[in-house]
Amino acid sequence: MEYDTRPQKLTSSLSQDSPPVTVINTLAAVALVSSDSDLLEAAISELQTIPAARVIAEDPEAHVPLVLSTNALNASDPEEAIAALQTALHTVPTDHITRNRLASLLISNERVEEAAELLNVELGRDVGVKSEGMRLRGIAKILAGDEGGLSDLEGAVRVCPWDVKGMEGVAWGRKILDELKE
Picture 1 (tube, rainbow, N blue to C red):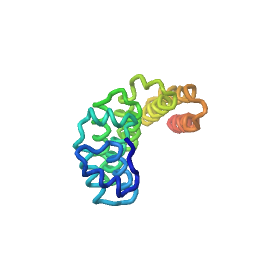
Picture 2 (picture 1 turned 120 degrees about the vertical axis):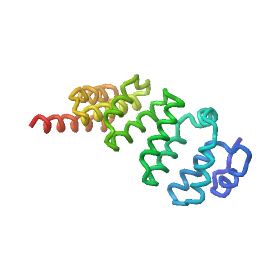
Picture 3 (picture 1 turned 135 degrees about the vertical axis):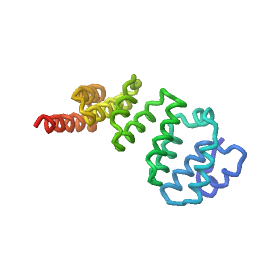
Picture 4 (picture 1 turned 180 degrees about the vertical axis):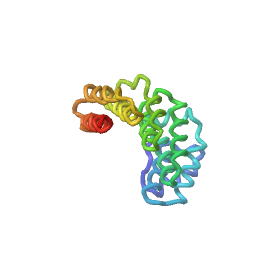
């Protein structure tokens, strides 16, 4: 089934009995970007009532938790953003993209031990996602005072050597560790 992506048509699809998750999520994202609080409230409300099994089936890229957490961050509520990602990860523990998003948010909220523990798992098979997880784990460990984080940062480069973020992570890690030694 094809869906018309013009905003008016997307908005009218909310009145259907069971609008597609992608349509609701798209409307929420558009509302976030355009600061349309009425549309955002309607879309977020709708997203929060969709059963988890349906979200998993219709949103394999985990965009719903991203929109919910972004909405919470826009409302200056990092704890709600963390809770949205934790709920999504609890529902699909193998979702490494959501795991990395949650770890990044934990790190930015100075919960580095929690982030390191969250990433203390097999980080998936996708080299980009795995590299990001290793890089985040290394950052969290170094910020927690664990020099072993440098090996995670170096491992991220070995997994995905073309990713500039990995090389920047190693440089940052070495700099921080050097500063700690002084």
